[in-house]
Image 1 (tube, helix red, strand yellow):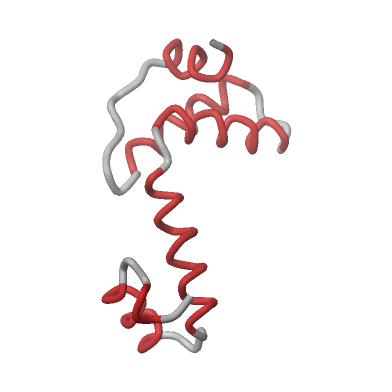
Image 2: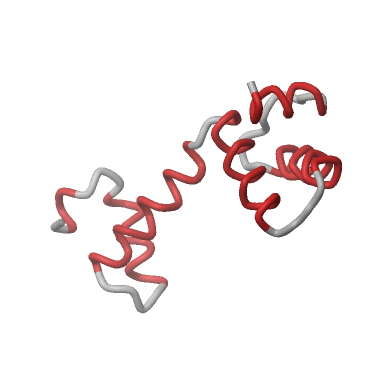
Length: 91
């Protein structure tokens, strides 16, 4: 991808100026970060539940942690009860 055609050219230029990354690497990092922050609350809860469950945490530990993490996200997610978090994971 050429630098001129990047949809976030100003951000790409900033990353290139402030890091040792090349244009391709910087574009991939930007895409990953945008995807992370573009993730819906529902997708975030499901992904984090799976990650934390794989580490051996219990559901009570997981939902407490996810609740705390959601409060810290750059764009605040709506406040969800433990029951709502469970429903996002298990339906």
